[in-house]
Length: 285
Image (cartoon, one colour):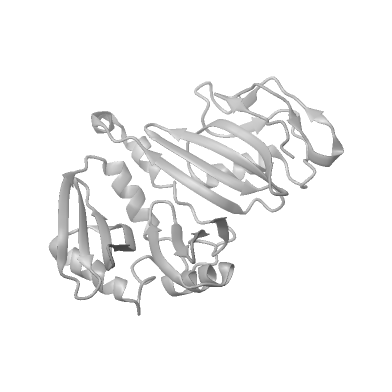
């Protein structure tokens, strides 16, 4: 059963939070910020512990450790018996959304949307510094390898190397997919000013097609660099977790470095795994 949501828009509470089984309502006029610009420390007024044993304030604090910016939306909700907080944060042209388990505040899922435009050229040094905090390590991280080493022992590591021989950039995304019976690797690399995408035959890593685009987002590149310093689980471990989750063989997979997310097609199911914690975040049939 869905519960009413507690929504904080631009720091203003627009509805009450229903605290699960206790049946109590919590309401507040707004959120208190450290500055008039609504940045720095934030305090949730009338902060009350939910039935899951945590508070909205604790969830907001945890989210701000993952991404530096202004909290624009907080929801407390339930899905298949699991209670969670969904928190949205803005920082310039970046929008970050994170779903936290309400019991222990572990990350269930996180997503970063980037709006790259010419306005990025006008940002100041403080904005760049803030962006570098976006990939702060999770306290529950189980990863033990950096992205550069996570694919060791798999042919995908050779695909990444082959792509980097053609373009000087760092890994943004890699996938292993099938098209008309032919399997291939698709590798996306990024530099400060350009984004490169290449499709390589899985048989011999020959180039099937490639594309180069301008990418004018220094802040986005710095964030990707920082992401590569975070510990993640290896592709081999992620494959094992995904296969065990639905007891079947893996058909296709993808890794997104920006979002620390593995996605697998396994026996007709889509399995998503948090690359930092190794937790299965979603299974769709």
